[in-house]
Image (cartoon, rainbow, N blue to C red; front, side, top):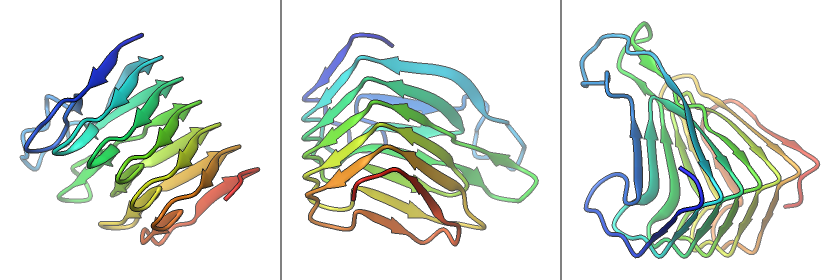
Length: 171
């Protein structure tokens, strides 16, 4: 997906503008793997409501040069599904030069997601800039040269039990 605008969308459940969901994930207890290769470049997600602008489960999208502004619920929801240890799907997003401003929440990371954020900005959120919630074990979020400033909630809330790696960041 390139050079697109997702404006003023509404959804009652997960994923207002874009939903990445592994099509093999039927909620059963089989190992469906992780889909990769999804790219979102130079896109604007603004004023979407009812759910997160992006919902991703069992996929590993790459976001580059995107903006998430004033989304009334949140910008990106990343979830790995692990009903049983041998039947996991992973969500491992990579974000480069992504700006999150004025959303309810920037990113919500649930489960064993491994997220890499490079040169990202999180500013003026009504709630947490980044929230990491563990289900079992935990993933790993690494930030390089990111700025997190002016948020009303936590800059980073982590209950994964694994560290959030910060490299040359401003908080």
